[in-house]
Length: 124
Image (cartoon, rainbow, N blue to C red; front, side, top):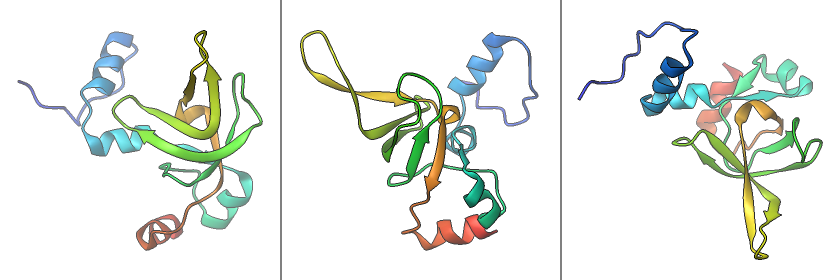
């Protein structure tokens, strides 16, 4: 079995892009799942985007739930998606299901700074 290549350069071929994301290791997956910060946080921490964590307050920027805010409930690195508390849809049989969001469709309003390492990392 071939290992994941970190020396990959961008390709316009969508098949290769999907393959790169599918075979990526955890470190690369963390880099691919980043969320933009709002203007206040950008100026405060001098960074544009950060890896999302459970407990961050985010605003949905695109789609049916746009302009709604909520805390991150789960970050799924394997499937590159994020669940937000309180945002659910109901299926035909009446059961409630969490809605999954792509990181590019979200914006962080408040950071969860319980972890000291994250605070040092954001302050650079």
